[in-house]
Length: 312
Image (cartoon, rainbow, N blue to C red; front, side, top):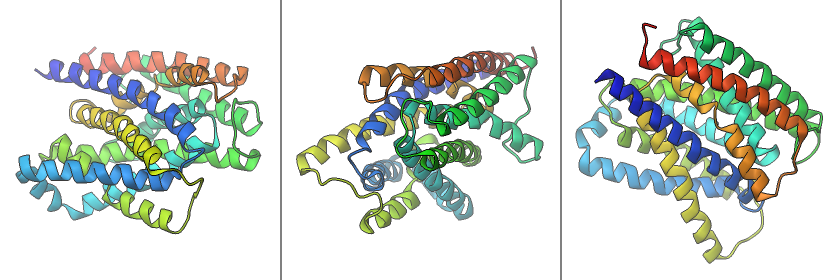
């Protein structure tokens, strides 16, 4: 039963990576024209209404348990808010594949740092294979940050200063996202299922993003209502499924395993952005991704082995 649940969690985590890869490329393009905070407040606002409403109807007991833990819910919402703001900004400023790589590369490193600090939710590396892979990931992420700041990547919106901001936001987003997984796992252990946790992650972000949009932050061109309608529908289709897949994975496997599997996404994004054509091909990015991909394969192999056969 445990092994079956772990395998199911791995499948959900892989689904999350594939769906999020499509999301990154699409958002990288659309946010050149559309306010990211306005978009986020509308799409995630609808998501909160949908999932909290569904939870109130079908999972009332779980919802009451969650609402009885206000400090944990506040921590989840604060973390999710800063994580999403970092994501939505970084993907506009630097190449989507690089933003994703730096963010996902920061995740397993953060999980290990939490363990070394003795914080519940952090995890030790389970075997030498996983440790070697994560070390390679850390090196590759550092190189990609250097390449981006030096202007060697396929896309940077602005000069070196903006590249620095994009790189730091991407790294911060990955670290915060790992902490968010840890917090959501704590809520899950209290008996709160993925539907309820998913709906309660974003209310604060919706309020903050809505206020920022009202103040004209990240204001861009004015679009027709029909065009906004298409963007919102696509946004819901690209945001809800991967985040839901992730929440299902959180309920079944460890944060470190999810982090290692998430490290497999950058090459999918790199291929998709080449097909899209907005981002120029960059040999430096490909070099960094190649090193990263090698590390992620090694780390994911060790992580999955440690999850499915913890005694080996």
